[in-house]
Amino acid sequence: MKRSPLVVLAALVLAGAPACSTSDEASTDDSDDGAIIIGAAVAESGGFELYDNAQTSGMQYAIDEINAAGGINGRKFELITADHKTDPAQVQAVTQELLDKGADAIVTTVDYDFGAPAAIAASKAGKISISGAGAPEFGFQGLGPLHFNVYQGTPSESAALAEFAYTTQGLRKPYLLEDTSIQYSKSLCAEFETAWEKVTGSDQLAGKDSFANGDPSIANQVSQIKAETETDFVVLCSYPPGGASAIRQLRTAGVDLPIYGGSAFDGTFWTEAIPDLSNFFHAAMASSAGDDPKADLNTFLDSVEYEGSASYALFGYLDIQTIAAGLEKSGTMDGDKLAEAIASLQDADLLVGKTSYAMDCHAPIDRPMAIMNIEQGVAKLAQYVEVDDVPRTAC
Image (tube, rainbow, N blue to C red; front, side, top):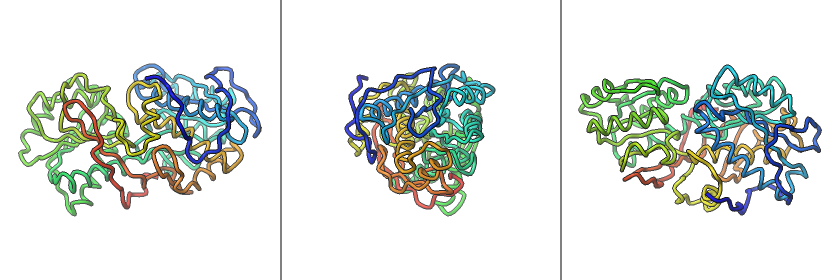
């Protein structure tokens, strides 16, 4: 998609100059008047780049906007990246590489398993870390006071899915199919089970089973789902490509029930192998179908260049927007002071809507969730769901 400037970087004071390009030769100036170096310890190869590259595109888009308007408090942003190649053993090393090059903040992979080592390394250096991920551990309680999650997390995601299924669609007997390969997919099923019991008042599951993302066949699991005749929808706690394969196998076997998924299924980049997919619903931070009620968000998604999921491009934009909002309040990139400023944000008017943090909750758990519906291969917004009384484990 061709880029065009976003009209407003909400609630931030911006003034104009050309953007700095991504560079491997970042300034090591750690004063409060030099360039702000954002270091992204992400996957640019090895498989997980499908998600991280979209985040990087969103970050660069936001940085270009800020720099074109003069920066924050007169300071421009610069993005540097280091590729951990989807290898957990390399994450800490590439993060240290970025810190050695003068990174003032670390953006991690959009996943707890790959992001946690980067967040821990940043914290040891006294720098904040930030990204978007679903696992509840990806926040203050899991990674400490210098880490922030721009996503609501699986407790909010699951609560929205449960509320939509029970209240809007009148469904009663879910079958949970859990992908055990990463913490996100495991936590999504665990949190959905908790949310379902809360919304129904009792344990109403039709059944549960598991698989791994790399499994070539889930024939046994599909047979079990078909055998549970009370099942009226399937909750698929997974992500592409294995999650897409699971959906294809379910549909090929004649399972036409509604299938519910998490935000990892945002967009239709993964549906090519499932022509005319219908009756599929998933949670998302916002609508990526161009029909979101927030006009600036639609403009951003129509303008930014990315492949894969829109949610991850939004994560990137929010990473920078959140840091910028904190910098405006704190006047410094000092980790402790910047973290305190971000944690004090209340109803900040960010691209995805009103966003609040707290000193003990570094995830915006109360922000409404979008529920997307794919029919005949086309995604559209079904509705936004308010998430009430989300467990603080998401913080």
